[in-house]
Length: 338
Image (cartoon, rainbow, N blue to C red; front, side):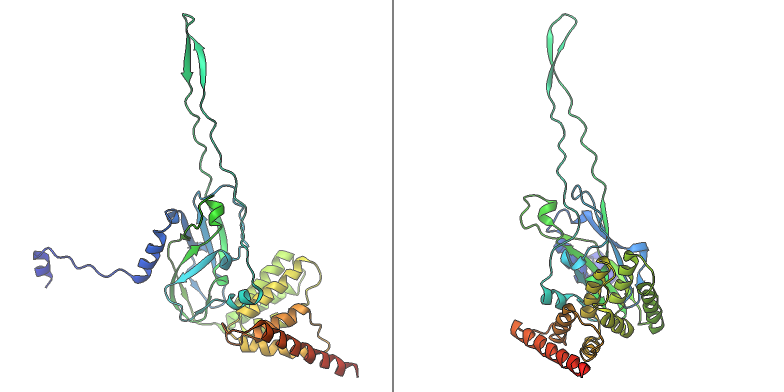
């Protein structure tokens, strides 16, 4: 068959990978897409479920004056496009619906640098005759260096099943600010990266949780505390769930450490085992010695209204559930005073 095809001048073309074709079609809509690239930090490609996955984003000369920011909320400016979604989840989907959070990160764009205009000047020759000379234009300013930021892929996608995954980013990152007067610019499309998710490792999860808790309970800096809180958030193991539920609302030493609460809220929303989250948080309602904040009750209410991720509820239903929890809490406090 092959010689016949060769004799006839026919060439067998394998069909293009559908995922690659999808990415290429999206990238073709924005000519600047080749100037946006992503890479796994340190070329590390294998991760456990719940392990932090740093992703380095590079923008080649797309704007001036951007500030580096390594604490960027990925879902607020980019979509993670996967070759398959089975075994994955969007950890912040229900949180965003519950709190209508928004806004993006990253520094403001700077102004465009304009070269000085050329001008005419008069030069007198040896014979005293004036000549008008046009100066050559000054050299253009050097292009700004690429802007690189590091995000955690875990914010945009949670990997629950082991396997090989491919993905790219569709970046909606301040399009009108990068390109003034651009209007509705199609998103920047990155290259494709590949990674492997291994099976869950209970021993590693316990060690990781223990290390984070040692930092949270020790004399650490605010940055170290926040990093440890994020470790529990993405880990999402049973121990991590229990610790986040028990610690939510208890950080009062400094305003900076109150930021742990938002990490714990995000972790409880994004945990794999939502039933355990609800059960653990409801236990605290009956413990009169456990101080509960308004944030705690609001978070429990919102999670309880979505026992299955993606469930729908009305504002009236949510308010009714909140009042039910408040009544349950009041009864526990009354019993404790008897």
